[in-house]
Amino acid sequence: MLITNIKALVGVHPKEKLFLRGSELNQLPILENAWLLLADGLIKDFGLMSEMPSHISNLKSQISAEGRFVFPSWCDSHTHIVFAAPREEEFALKIAGKTYEEIAAAGGGILNSANKLQKATEDELFESASIRLNDMIKKGTGALEIKSGYGLTVESELKMLRVIKRLKAAFPIPIKTTLLAAHAYPTEFKNNHQGYIDLIINELLPKVAEQGLGDYIDVFCEKGFFSNEETAQILTAASNYGLKPKIHANQLSSSGAVQTGISHQAVSVDHLEETDDEVLRALSNSNTIATLLPSCSFYINIPFANAKGLIESNAIVALASDYNPGSTPSGNMNFVVSLGCIKLKMTPEQAINAATINGAAAMELSEEVGSIAIGKKANLFITRPMSSLAYLPYSFGQSQVETVILNGEIYNG
Image (tube, rainbow, N blue to C red):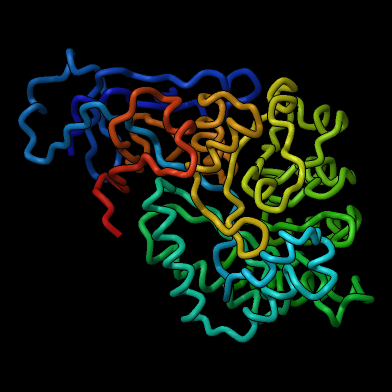
């Protein structure tokens, strides 16, 4: 496939550049009036229209992208899209002023989703997650991480992980799997935290490893959930099974969770709505990625992460959707990028880099997706006609995605 007359080819980073740190996020290489050649599912070549080789100009499979931008697909590195049912019954409670913690304490929140998921069949979970994933792909997402965490029993967590494995086989994008059994304490373990941790370590982790169902381990390290000490215990045990950490940190309080993640060589620490000077210092020059989830802050009215401070501290910053039924019922990465600009005060270049190459890095996928480079997977999207790069985040709530291409072929869903 040959794409010609591209107004701007976005994210033309050198292939060896696998993530952007600090001020590097300001640099978003763009090639204007360009062509792009795709073959065998990969990016084969690209360049200026004025320099396009004559031998490819007559290819039968051509798309003219006149007036349009071509982006690498969004890389969404934090989602919870396998769930049994939405939680709109909690929506009015939020409007009435109930906090996330109050709703959870009243039997809502994660435990609400767990109760519903335990009753759902694997086929039901697969079908509903497939609808969500298809919608995300049509909005430009071309690589994804999916967490468990709504099972909270050995069998239900394994059921979720099997569904994610089926999604990997059914959809044409890279998908990474994260075990998040340490999402909350089941009711029966409310006063026996160590009993649930022992269940995860002694029963669940061996089965996940034996069945090849996980890439990462996640823990909700937060006051009222899993302490730093409990988190460290789970991360250490999971490392014996080859599961790398990607943890929920500093969503509701600044409790040392980021430092716990870094000390265990976490691939990423996610949320960081509570970002103090100690967090900034800890992430400065660290290879652990700070994954920010602004649509969660938007939806449940909690502070937005300090993206500017993190970037100024030379951290690696990514953006992700946090798509889940309770605190972020949306997987629209276009809106996430808009919020990155509007609420996190990131420039369009910073936000786009954070949602592409750095999102890929947060899934250890940036050697194959996240930028426009020869030899990378041909996962990208063509926009509607746009006046400038900034128009995409400016037009919040809309999707400027006109054509989705995955593995070098147009995706019709």
